[in-house]
Image 1 (cartoon, rainbow, N blue to C red):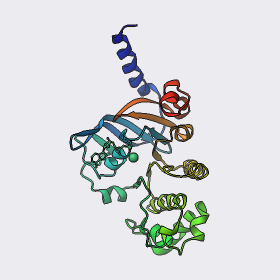
Image 2: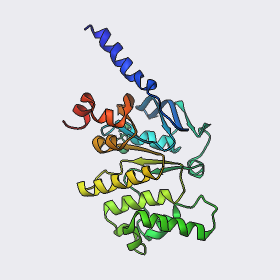
Image 3: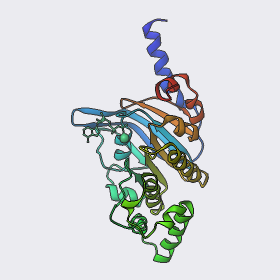
Length: 261
Ligand SMILES: Nc1ncnc2c1ncn2[C@@H]1O[C@H](COP(=O)(O)OP(=O)(O)O)[C@@H](O)[C@H]1O
Ligand SMILES: [Mg+2]
């Protein structure tokens, strides 16, 4: 095979996912997104989509551009090129707080809970953009406590006293208090012990079963792809592979590069 054919094959492989039919309303559509940090090109023409009720995983190694993507979706970085449509609306002019208001919730890398505030105050802060009555919010709080019983137990404690895994639950709970229509999760398993990683992914699975639409970015490719309805592989700011989550988790190249097999 000539080198040229190799390139062609590769290009075709990258293009192929478009042929995979995906059902459901389009919630997020990213087209040709490029983002630079000064002279560093972090994202180079990234396109992807997330449909209603899907769990979509974007996997890639450290520095691939995963956090840059989520931060750009949330309005924290300005793209140099490309578009982001959320519920068919171009969000370019929306500020970060407005994106939260329309239902895009971002759980940042490293959790970022408000350490001196109580667990319950952290959760209630997640509802800051809502205009619902307090009894409605308290009802939602009960739902969060149902999902994370440990947070109910610790609700009067300062968030800073929680373990890493519990802080991750809190960060997710806080995002859910905003009643999002799209949950953006940045490496929820990062820095956690294996048992807690499994617990976090169990929560993600339960949210998926409840019909939440989720875009998760992860270095932990195995766990994320096995759960995901659809997956993308990000390498040095470019999507190099896309496909059904299960198929990608069994893809020989992906296994070699990301799953350490
Ligand atoms: N604020 C920043 N300033 C300069 N370079 C950055 C900044 N944030 C990220 N980068 C660079 O952009 C690239 C992508 O980073 P990032 O999106 O954090 O990757 P990932 O989340 O996949 O680890 C890396 O080369 C990183 O060093
Ligand atoms: Mg990151």
